[in-house]
Length: 210
Image 1 (cartoon, rainbow, N blue to C red):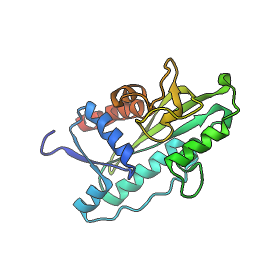
Image 2: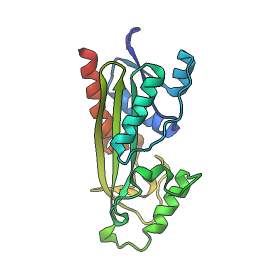
Image 3: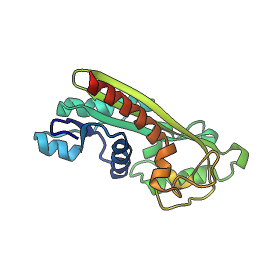
Image 4: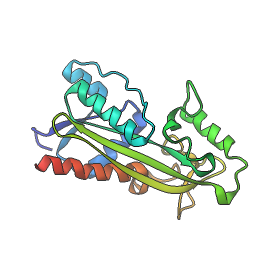
């Protein structure tokens, strides 16, 4: 990375997502300096407001967040919106994944609720999908959003100590482990977030060359 590398803000305050995004984007070897929101606020002397996820799709919410942070900082911003879509729940929690169990929702309460809601669903109907929309907004060059997904099925009980969110109950197709039982590099190679951000990295690299 050169001293004149472009500064790009990772538009999330979720520690787990920050760790994953830095890890995934580091593999792309982009000539950019990735900073988080607190670093941007300290660097620029600004306050980045909380951005409400009012969109009805992952793409809309990702764009809301990247555009909002770009506007607040004047810097290019990357954001994502992701979640679990369960066939037996008509595609829910979907965009409500992070707050599925209501006010004060946590990963643990959201996970427990989905386990309870699908307890009686037979094995052949336990299909699910992880979806991630990754958005990039630049002050001059506008916005781009890409999507990555991972097909799988729901385990009946949580397994594994890695990952976060719904990872302990999500088993990718052609595997027997949950994504919480996979090593980080194994999960990144197939995950919805890994797929989306590798595509976004290509967009970043292309813009840097222009």
